[in-house]
Image (cartoon, rainbow, N blue to C red; front, side, top):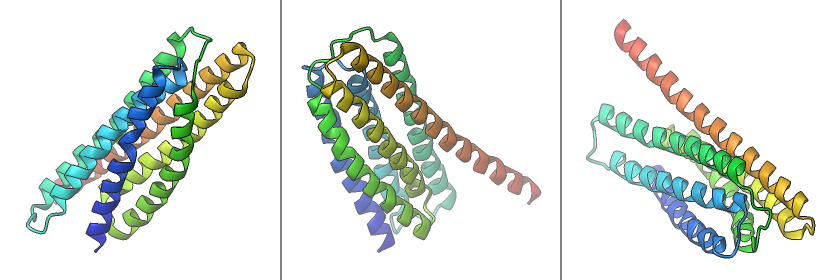
Amino acid sequence: MKKNSGKSTLLWSVIMSSPGPLVVGIGLLVGKSSTQLADFIRRSIELLAIILSFIIYCITNKENVTDEEKKQKLEKISNIFVGSSMILSGIIMLILAITSQSSEKGNVIPGLAIAVLGVVANSIFWIRYKVLGDKTDNNILKTQSKLYRAKTFVDVSVTVALTVVLISSNPTVSYYFDLVGTIAVSIYLAYSGSATLYNILKKRGKSEDERERA
């Protein structure tokens, strides 16, 4: 039952995350916000990470899979990809924030709508993965909890930045809020991804020490 709960939660994560890049991407056709562009790239990379996690979770939790070492290696690959995706997203967003010179942001409503929905959906998934991860002690689910915690805070930042861009009549104010919003999001993503990779490497180091002692 717990395995099925993890699988169904990951499947819903894939389903709920899939429309995000499409809608934000369409919004980019009529908007020029660096926050919105960075958000599109971030959502696309994270979607790939979630899909990979779902596939590996399904493989490692089949009833006929008994090779524990192989399962741990696959779970590690999934978690490394998730951590790397957060770091890569953060770096891309930071580069876009620094290089963006446009003060005309266009229509940011599609990106704002997705960000608001993301705050609600991602916070639910964050709690759900936290509970499942604690119950099952599954590394993939625990890492997904960290990813969705980051996604929740990122969407809050994106919502604030795009709201200011939408309601502000001052292009300078919009530009700097957009810039600060993107930089804040990129730093948090890079930090979260780095922390995830650090924990993976730390566990790996402990496992190698235990093997040497044995």
